[in-house]
Image (cartoon, rainbow, N blue to C red):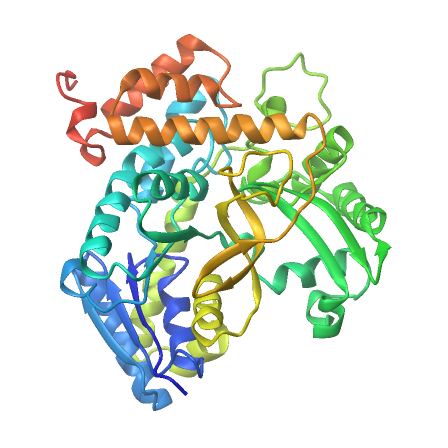
Length: 461
């Protein structure tokens, strides 16, 4: 068997990726003979992850090579895959985005992909993503770059447009195969629980999901040739009937919102925790007759507690207060490392990947950046045919794509006029005056996380 790849994780302290990458690289027969390189500009976090990794290597007697650096340029050479998973004080600034936007009539339950939150997160993160891309082009030009940073579509478009010679695609963990198929097999009543699904059941299940990331829709589902959309709808309706006003903002009333959107567009929104934020219906601009409430707002303090708990757990593993066997038992494969394993080994597995459409969705442009089921190997993703969007929903897809395209242009040029157009193209911004006020306040509040060109000449209160 050939030696495993060198995988560089830029932003290894990520809540959602660093630990999972470590687990997969330790366990995979394909990857464990390779090199995992952790990069994080926070030296304390980097040292803690490296300490955990070395303990696990000894505990599992693994041949994995583990290295780390605060400077990616010292370790990129020889990389086969570069995974981007960083954010500049992401939870804090999402909280700022949501609070300022809500004050001006725009409600966001997540605030990291659409609306002012998605736009400003792109302004903060895309310039550094493109800096990484330039380093990759110079130091390891044959490497695959996998973007794991929200907004996935906007940042993926940024790489496609402004680093066109780079080999790249983007990911979101919401459609991780084969787990997504198993969930829908359970929804369709084929199995009682997702864990009961077998590989043969997965092979007999034709599931068609596509759209702009976080605005993806179930366009078709057949099991052994039988249409199971009605069965899935019955499951959604049963859940909706039991929902109450509890839980965090991204989870509240999800199936009730999903059922309402299904009634409108004839399709199920596959990422409803985000999709409910992409439409204007629950923004609170009503006469009070809506059955469903306005969106709950993203709670940054709640999310920060989860991040803090992650680091407390890592410290407990390092100090021996928590057994390493708990790490081994409770973590598992990640979407990106599953894909890297399949690409490197030539396993021929199919995955949902964000990439250029290339004709897979017949009624959207070939360069539309969509999440689609793809054949995937070291030659890159090749989207499989997905069908077409129904009228109405197709135009909303294009509106979201236009918003992302304009946002990317604004992030690259630091042009306020383009930023304003992006904000006023966005599907949940409905006032020129409010859009201008949000731009003014967020440029000021986030000036130390943005390129200086955005705030030159802006008075600091």
